[in-house]
Amino acid sequence: MDFLSFYFKNWPQKYQKKPESGSQNQYSADLIFISDLMIVYTYFSIPSFIIIFADSMKNLSAFKALISQPQKVVIVTHFKPDADALGSSLGLAGYLKKKGHHVTVITPSNYPEFLAWMPGHEEVIALSKTSKAPEKKAVTSIENADIVFCLDFSALSRINELGDWVGKSSATKVLIDHHLDPEKFAEFEQWDTTAASTAGLVFDLIGELGDKNFIDANIANCLYAGLMTDTGGFRHGNTTQKEFLTASELVGYGANPSVISKLIYDTNSIERLRLLGFVLSQKLKVLPEYKTAYMTLTSDELKQFGSQTGDTEGLVNYGLSIKGIKLSVLMYDRKEEIKLSFRSLDDFSVNEMARKYFEGGGHKNASGGQSKLSLEETLNKFLSILPEFKEKLNSNS
Ligand code: 5GP
Ligand code: MN
Image (spheres, protein in one colour):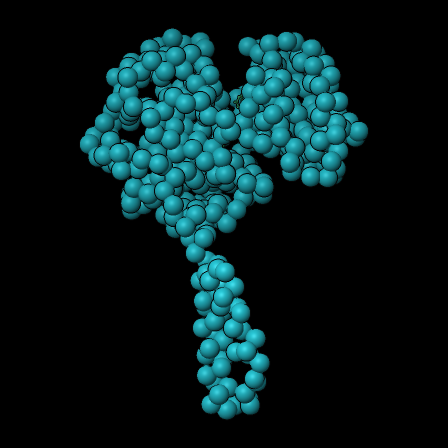
């Protein structure tokens, strides 16, 4: 019998005899009742405390020793970084710089304009397809690095050609991530698929190292941006009490929710809004028998709306906002390949679909992938696999 069952067993006798109200007995009975409530409350609080404060990096003391001396650090995040990728990278960079390390952040591509406010972004080496110069700088940094941090991705293929350089580098590798199915390439891992954001994991790690006092408003704003966007503004199913606790602490360290929300969500160009209008009125299709919505965008259509990196971000969510829809997919031609974005509700795993058919992956309810076929062929492929998922799409879970 566990402690609580044992404790409850005595409750009927304890509370059977009702003392006269206002009597001395009444007061002591009240006190006993309050102390009982406190015991029950503490009992239920203990597990959540353990979960919240347990170390998520397994060999934390070895990691602590590794970063106890100034090191040459490279932080890499995934291709076409989103706010969590860039925010977690720049938040970690800000912290490590304060600890005396030499830090270089590399992104395998450019990033959306609406992230170009993040403190430290001016120093990021962003690879571009057109210029060779920054790529050499990036390779040299990786070759000379003592530590390479890989943030917000779990497979080296997500950083394209940089993956080869990271793979063969003699630097100690550290993975901080929350995606499913990670590759084993890092000596240290802070990997938790239940975490809503990589930014939250960086925050946890700084806490586990006993260094929260290093968090300033710049670091807090970067981390808050990652947490806010990967939870869809604290609305997605991955939003738990933990995310609110982290957000609350970050605000305590100087993060400004309304400013960050404005910078990320409300700095649209008119072209981006027109693209949204075009997609919603002309391109959004619904297949009620599969509880599916999808949209496609050709490279000409993207060009017509002067589309920039990041302009397609968030479009896929509109499909999922339709009542009764469980799966939403956006397919667009980004020239090198067709990019697919998947979103789903409840137990329907888009990670499975993206991995099996579109060389991709991600999370259960938000994944991405690509296809080397034409846009039309990619759409046909998608339509042809839907029957395989019909039962799951129509189930109630
Ligand atoms: P998005 O649709 O916003 O590009 O991506 C949704 C989620 O899936 C993000 O967590 C992103 O990191 C992940 N993701 C996007 N594209 C790919 C991909 O090609 N491969 C894998 N493994 N994950 C992806
Ligand atoms: Mn993320």
